[in-house]
Length: 591
Image 1 (spheres, rainbow, N blue to C red):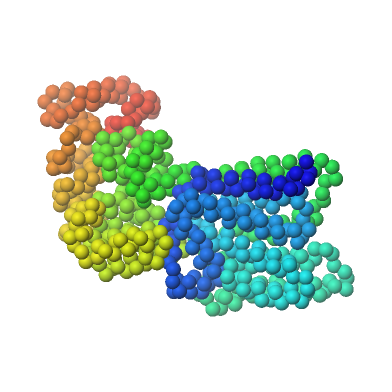
Image 2 (cartoon, rainbow, N blue to C red; image 1 turned 180 degrees about the vertical axis):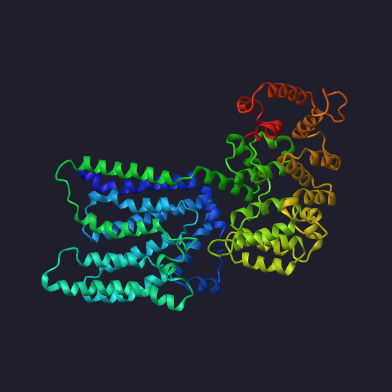
């Protein structure tokens, strides 16, 4: 059994953790990978290369962005990320062999990888951190292979500053390993001062790297110490990253001095594995945000215009945030179901229909998607630009650049559109689309014949006005009156006043719906009409609208149940009538 475990134990652990990594990123968090990809724009070319490598950690950042672009296809990103995480563990174990760590402690070498695993569930942590850690491990292994003391000193003097520039402040981890390795096997009295001198020299050299960089670069010293490219918000103190660095520095030293059990090694090894497994599972699970992945999946489906999958997802599980609800309402509108099914789902006010502007990257992108589909092209263009400018690390966004190319093409701003398209032509996954779109430049007939761009040209405003998110109903009304074929604009107009519970405006705007050419009155409009009618009439006689018998009966039953129940005790009503506009109008408004 001992021979079997020695021969296949490490491979079995790698396989087990590899499957866990792969399933987590492929099934548990695939949309997070796609979300990361859209907030960068990796472009081939010398100018982009020099822009990245001009700062400490730039090479790792360049490689990280190159690899991150493959998150465009989440399963490819999951496979690649699994390979990187397993490579990190393998290199760490190779380094530990130079520290004479026993194979018995292989499970403990997964601890830094598990910490990094949890840390990487933060959407703002960048892949350059993983690449930088791989670099520092490779440099440390090469250092450990040097047997001559003078070669090692020369290696440190050359590679410590080099490592800082290509990988960033992970060079402190390398310096920490060297310092600990200097005193690992004990020190004779006659050597202690020389070794202390070596230790001080290494520490001073490591500290000098960010200090010298601060002289040349216009960044705060704290950013050059914590890293410019490891976290999207590089002004933030990365406490999790600091813990990871400390663990990587101390782990080799700790494992090298741990005693080996004399008996029952299989039992103790199994206990060690179970502790790592259980602790790692709870640690990673604590960082797993179901609501975040749920919202990001909506974002991913909208990006790929999979409207039916959005509706099916909401039918399976009710959206938990206004972020998700915005995209669900858009999907209902794009499939012509907004007036019939909107209140089947728990609405979250105006933020779930058209979010107000905020200076963060997610909200303008979400609202801009709605404006673009409505035909408010100039507003969509402004929001796309604002979303890109609000990116936490000031990078370009592939999704925003693509949208800016589309809006300028629709508006006939061909030179501006060409500028964005030339950027996309230097990418992997957007090149083909950019080449195809370039053929539309200056070709009015071809654009007008395009099923999306041609329609949006006809639907957009032709007159200028001041945008006001406080008068959205007026802007939606003007948009619909400009082109009566834009049924989505009318449905958003009606949804807007219904969510505000403004029945006077609902009755004022409803008549223009005759231009939308419905084959029936949408169910929620019927519910609103019946409610207004019953506020002034005792029965349904004389109603000027074609209301279905089911809606009339539902209104009568709801009215009796509502009047006979007491405020604060109407939960049963919500359960029975939660898919109606009456529930939102009267029950959701109760405190």
